[in-house]
Image (tube, rainbow, N blue to C red; front, side, top):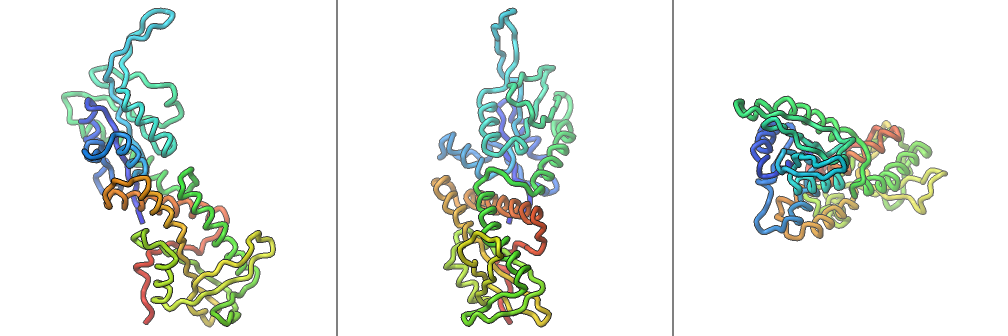
Amino acid sequence: MRHIPHAFIISSSKGEDIAESIERVLNRGNTMHVSSWGKEFQPTEAFMESLRRVTLQYDFGIAVITPDDVTVVDRKTGKVVTTEPRDNVVFELGLFSSALGKKFVLPVTVTRDGITPSLPTDLAGISHFKVTIDPELKLDEQVEKECERMRQHMIAHYERAELSLLPSTALAIGYFENFIRPVSEGLLEAKACLIGQDRKRSEVHEWGIKVCIPQDLAKASREDWSVEVRRLGLETATVDLPKESKLLRPYPFQVGAVGKDGTLQIFDAPTTLKTVYEAVKRLMPDATEADRKIAHERGVADFWRSLQYLLKEAKVYNVEIVDWDKLPAPK
């Protein structure tokens, strides 16, 4: 699962040197992965296809806003001369804001030769970062302070469990409401579960839930999980639904043997995540496997952060996510 934020930098050609400097500084220390437009654009892709791809792959967008175009505005009081950022930068900034949310878009306003770009009023409410460029000094040194602010902003928002409008959030809510919540409440109420084909009743006093996700999302299917269940020697179990549950039937899950002290380890795979794999395949039909993998990783990370938010809200603390490819085989 992705553990560090991925950020994408957009800029005009006049701001490319600053974008590359920000990229170098932010990539120090391996606390995040940052790429700029020049390194991500693929000659075989159309412009809009490239933009759509990166909004699916990256967690944050950084827009380097430089004073590029002199514009004369005819207002009632007379003509006003302003210096505007390039149109494509404003367009891409709006696209990222719509796709990712304003907390995940970082405009960097650059003052160069004493000129600061005029910004659209729609950018109000978004955290801004400001850099003043002195041609006599090294660029990396001049962007370091704001880069550190950006780093702290991105890490804080990446690690903060919260819900978003991303599809992975909807998958996490469905998984929590249809599996995690009813199983947890059922075990709290019944203090027992029914295991195996003979539905043997076993007393349960403590339990933990391992949410199992494969490294390759193409394997996140019921068929592949069934193979893994057989390899691990797990048994199918159910728990009576809590009285207030609106579900029609208990959700089956896999377990290991119940310990003598009544402890139970539950294993389950959210095969609904195969939806992320299928969606990426359709939304990025011409992308490379490496590019698709980045989008898969983002989908899984968003799913897990959303699930963490729901678990914390419900005060459920005995759930962890694991890589099912690394689960130990039975001895």
